Length: 377
Ligand code: HCA
Ligand code: CU
Image (cartoon, helix red, strand yellow):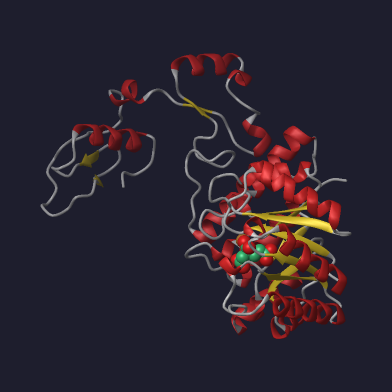
């Protein structure tokens, strides 16, 4: 059975600092995600505010193929809000780990939490919603507690159990062990939600797939709380190149990446696999030579696979003498300013102005960046 992909850019991604999607942003991203062929789209938490409820409702109406999921705590009003906004699925979540109890459950004992979870799931089923029940912070929760709460959730009618590595602490072997135990113990599909605090989210996703998980949560460029979650775009490329899963429209990757950059102002750093500015740039002299004859010498896959182009960049030292502009290095900037500044006074007449306190290595760095087309910060 092929793995299903849930994209949570519009819910988890909206928890990235400074990110707030309008209804139109969400509608546009839903269209792109559907064209990319994800299976589920998690679009928000409608109970947060009337505005969120309205945005979720408009966005849900735009979905054509993907099943739409909305987030809710184990509270009847929040579950009702997802139904009113047109969700197919409600994602109910609760933690049973005292380290991470949300304010709703702080001070409550385990049987109390279980009671609320059961009631919420039963209520959601009465509303004709499909239910994903997530054990938040599963990666720091004793297996006995996971088993206790998840078994009750399944008994109450949950269609799927999701285990969350909320703080991104799993190593791949630990993730695989827990997912395998869940697959062996629960008579339903297992989903996994993996944060990237140690940079292991994608590795953990692959381990979870090997262990039998049915659904992986992702977001475009991995955006989410703190260091985010599994990057949809990276995972899709890995699934195609390493697992022969060819369903994704990988050539659309630049469109998805740009849509998120434009709506969130988040930029992937230049080293980021697939979407980073220099993910397909070759610089070292012998790399450049080898790649111009035989690209696979230094490429894991063709850049065109993901809608990108190869870039061959000369090494900066040889480039500086060919700069098409006038440079003035080390010109004192007004006292009190400690930043690098630049100034343009017409085509071909660019000047890089430096603060008098920065050293020559920093100035070289500024020139390199300047030549590479980026403005010095
Ligand atoms: C959150 C926490 C969560 C929930 C995941 C889920 C996590 O932001 O509410 O409900 O499946 O990482 O545990 O994103
Ligand atoms: Cu999360």
